[in-house]
Amino acid sequence: MSLDLQHDRLLTRFEVEQHFAIPKRYLELAGLRGEGPRMVRIGRLVRYRPADVRAWIEAQATEGK
Image (cartoon, rainbow, N blue to C red; front, top):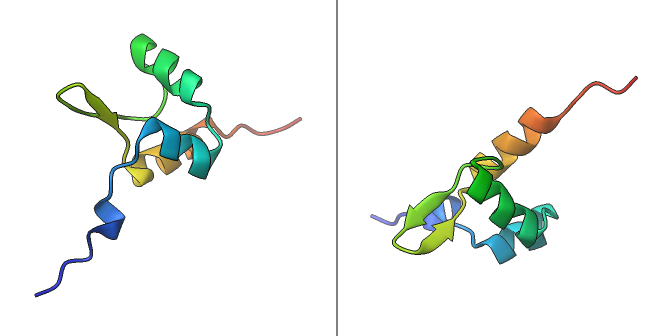
């Protein structure tokens, strides 16, 4: 049985910055304030699920006037 783990891959802040254009520094500060995309802490490491980042981006959408 083969598992496709690519969809479960956790991203670093650098990778989130590269793939989603959210600055690493924003992610750091937002994490301290309890804002921004949901993050996963593994010991001292901080990682992000791509689905959580996409959901957070979608939640930020506003109607333009």
